[in-house]
Image (tube, rainbow, N blue to C red; front, top):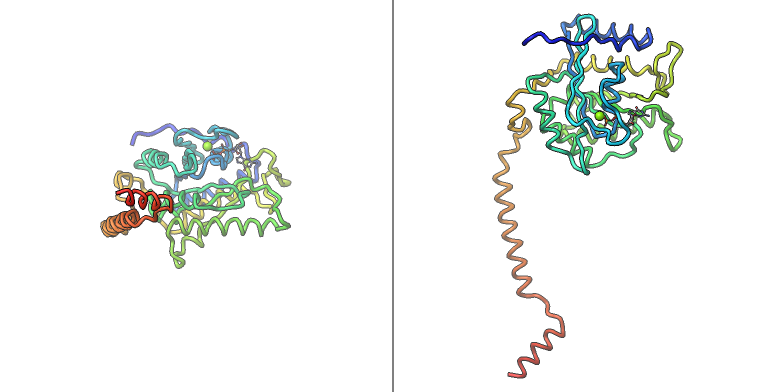
Length: 311
Ligand code: GDP
Ligand code: MG
């Protein structure tokens, strides 16, 4: 591959010294494990803070953020180098449109990723969302169908808007635990993980606060209500995922064109179609006989009777 000019990660200098030191330490550790580049894929619904998280981590305003129409129309890869380490972050459009998972967006993301290896998936949602629903499950299913179940071994859940006061007298930790558990449960369902699959319990959940009003500690680092300085914590989680012994996901032509990586169940499709065919036939038969035996209202019977009497 031709050598590409990758910009220096100068945004790191925006961070307070304590954060910079921790980040360089983490990258140094990865280099000791012979990892000198990382490709991080960011996915989730629209407006949850994907692009803001990219900007926060890079330390520059590299992708557009907006409170309304907050979407990146297509995937964008931001690459930065620092101390011979390359960080690639791929920001993507929201996966939901008009209440449904947008398959075209997923296809577009897949094509964009051709020949790239996803080292880590950050699945982004908001901490201050109180419900998970079937749509969340559909999103997880769509990601699983596109990239295979193995993507979840390489995933972390990111919850933005983490500077909040929990409702109903819950402590911050209790609220965080409840929100994480409900999201991980839906994730397990959408990814069709079995209880014994280790992945579910090991998918880390990390908190992020992108707002400029995020509290800071004495070192000037952005901290959450639980006292954790979140930027180094997010990067630490990412490096833990990379070192967890699972493999990155290579997006090759085969993965893009399918067959669906989880489609072992496809052998049942002809059977389902046959059952459906006979079911439809049966239902049609029922409707036909119902129409034939249809209850006739009194006036109609009376008219029929009257007509009969006439002849
Ligand atoms: P995306 O569509 O997922 O990329 O979301 P954006 O990053 O464009 O963010 C949508 C809106 O949420 C913008 O107004 C952001 O300023 C705001 N936002 C994003 N993350 C946070 C966060 O952690 N805290 C707060 N308070 N606002 C956020
Ligand atoms: Mg965006």
